[in-house]
Image 1 (cartoon, helix red, strand yellow):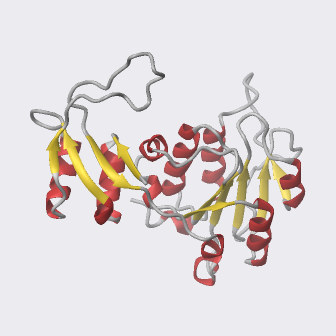
Image 2: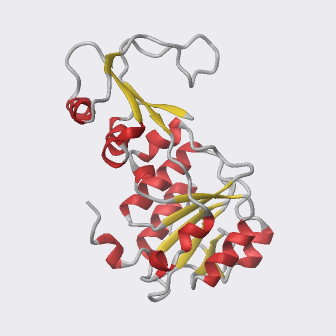
Image 3: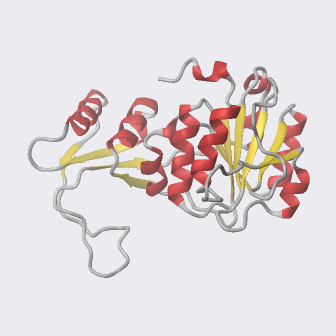
Length: 251
């Protein structure tokens, strides 16, 4: 399926990682911004068509007659294919300590995109998404991720319990997150690889998923606000759990 991306950082990442999957770039009339100019230069290097953008209906509008501003820049790309679950836990991927994430029924595409962006920053080795009741990997996710989707391998699970079993067999510790958990995560659990699981924005982790976790953890509030948006909480926990060596190659 093709997607229309409007964040130049997202488009640039696709051009650098898989340029054959960029079908065309559309620029606003006149002189492009420095970021879109860099995108256009990369596109020219790969002989990708560059056109002038015209006004078009806003695909994210609520049907109330809104339209995209004249000349908005964009690119049409092929969505990135997901991996098989087993491919995230190969011997090569698990030979050194690392961090994996599982997102159970996250429904806000902005949360999913923000988590992918942060995961790419912290060198997360893979992300598992659930198939049911989850936000699809839409253009909104790609643009919010600002290129992160191109650098973090991901798979879609129809059965998260089976995925957890595979992760355990590969030697990963399974750490679930819950605002009701008694244990506060203060420091990383040694040098063991970890699968960190986040639940739905409203309901959290399902009970059956919690039962498959080795431990549950929470973040203790230090002020009057008692909870965090899931993408913010994910960023805090990734900063604590990502092995130091995974940050050495972070640009």
